[in-house]
Image 1 (cartoon, rainbow, N blue to C red):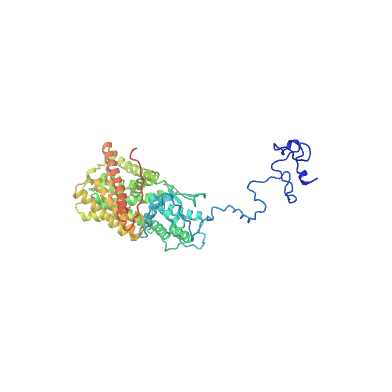
Image 2 (cartoon, rainbow, N blue to C red; image 1 turned 45 degrees about the vertical axis):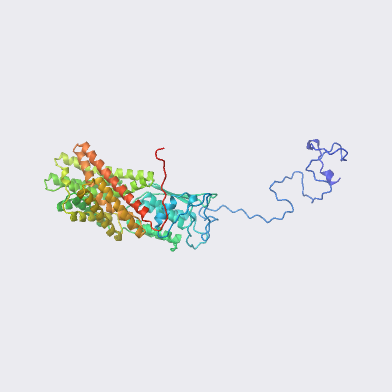
Amino acid sequence: MTDAEDRKPKSDEARSGFLPPAGTAVDGDMSTTSEFAIPEGLALHRGAVSESETTSEFAVPDGLDVSHAPAAESEGSAFTPPNTYSAKYPPSAFTPPSGIPVVSLTKDVPWQDRMRTMLRMPVAERPAPEPVQRHTDEAGPAVPRVLDLTLRIGELLLAGGEGAEDVEAAMFAVCRSYGLDRCEPNVTFTLLAISYQPSLVDDPVTASRTVRRRGTDYTRLAAVYQLVDDLSDDETAVSLEEAYRRLAEIRRNRHPYPGWALTVASGALAGAASVLVGGDLLVFVAAALGAMLGDRLAWLCAGRGLPEFYQFTVAAMPPAAIGVALTVGHVDVKASAVITGGLFALLPGRALVAGVQDGLTGFYITASARLLEVLYFFVGIVAGVLLVLYFGVQLGARLNPDAALGASDEPVLMIGASMLLSLAFAVLLQQERSTVVWVTLNGGVAWVVYGAMHYAGDISPVASTAAAAGLVGLFGQLLSRYQFASALPYTTAAIGPLLPGSATYFGLLGIAQSKVDEGLVSLSSAVALAMAIAIGVNLGSEISRMFLRIGSAEKRRAAKRTRGF
């Protein structure tokens, strides 16, 4: 039997619908062949075809000489750098059909402004990545390690009171300095997150970190800013290991001022504030003693693990108690000035400015959380002072609100008191000694502007406060740009003399004396003054960024929204 006969179907079930033409000789009765049958005379290798053999349409034809495909790359860990990343030859940026707008990111502009500009751009419209730094490993650092370092730096900034926009800018600067350009940071009040996607087809890598503890230390804040500035500088090669080492040193550094210095600074702040509202030397001493006693009690409560709400409540009681005791003892002293000075040392001006700034820059969740924190602190102060004032009124203390309304007729004394207040506030904020002088002068300038507008020009206190706070923000931003540092050390302590301590006290006193309407009016005035301070500081900072960018075509995009429709 031939090979062709052997390949014929053996049964009727295997017949196809194709029959041979008439007159064609076939072997066997009713024998049929398929169109896929191999023609007779075609030489085949033995064993090339079997009855049950099937092939895929993707199979390589016989006789086609191809090289073996490379072995499939094993799935790597998330802690290995992308195989498409090269520190020496970074991938080119994606170019949209409409082209990339020309954005000038000059080197003389601080990294904060450059990072803000790119963060407000879509990822596809950001300019090409800057040359990344040299690394010992040519493949670049592992992506998760860079994200971890970024989150740790952002945690220190956010815990130190920095605004959400500046925290995002710092996080983006760290990632960009290590070649991770397609990253998106996200900052809320207690949670930091960042996501990096190497390309449009690669899986993103996301990491997050929770901020659980907050502490005021502007020396640490300045050190973190210096680290970010060094990372953003092309001429400074800071490896990932070196950045981790410097970050660990920043965390281990002790505060620049001991505990007793903070207590003395709290007393000096309260005494200077009492002079600003018309107090004399006796009032200065009484307010200072009350504030220092409240500070020590607050430290004791903190050591026992009590929340900050109760710490503010306890700290507000001693100044109010001393003022009430002097009134009950018929001592010829302005008790209202003593209590007002004690309130100045407790008002959360730093958190208020940061909360309003976050709201003005579009971070509404963080702004709501910060302002809610301020509200809780304020309620704690109200509870402590009201409790003391209520018992004082029941004991027959005659507290006269008008006693604190008269300001001193000596402008030099008022300016000196405002500068002392700013100096003490700077010490409480743990600022570097090099910045204390600048913020003290800035606080004196703020009070000069406020006094000239309010007392000499008879302008409303809200407008005067807003103008003085705007000047504080402008000068603070100029000083920070000169130092390539954060603006907080130059602005927060300078707004101390402008805080609404007297309006807050008058509101609480009115409520304690059952004059609820007058008390609510005074409290509303205090809220208006606080908002004027926060908005003025933010407006001054924005004006400096808008008009003082010489030789740069950089524009920081703002969010465009509809106007009611």
